[in-house]
Length: 67
Image (cartoon, rainbow, N blue to C red; front, side):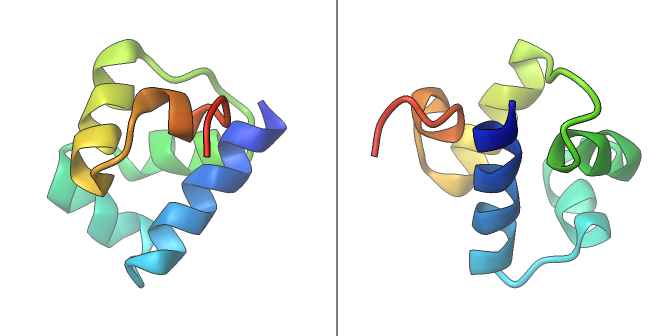
């Protein structure tokens, strides 16, 4: 989970987005995004796919399974 949280933070930082701005763009609550970045909650598959599409990466990349 630590790798997942770190990658989420890095992807958001690369786009210079706040959690609130990302929330509005992908349609996911800012509280959920914050919990994922802190490693306090598990992500649902549909939300994982939304983020992968937004960032143009694979779900495996977000989980840290590929470079």
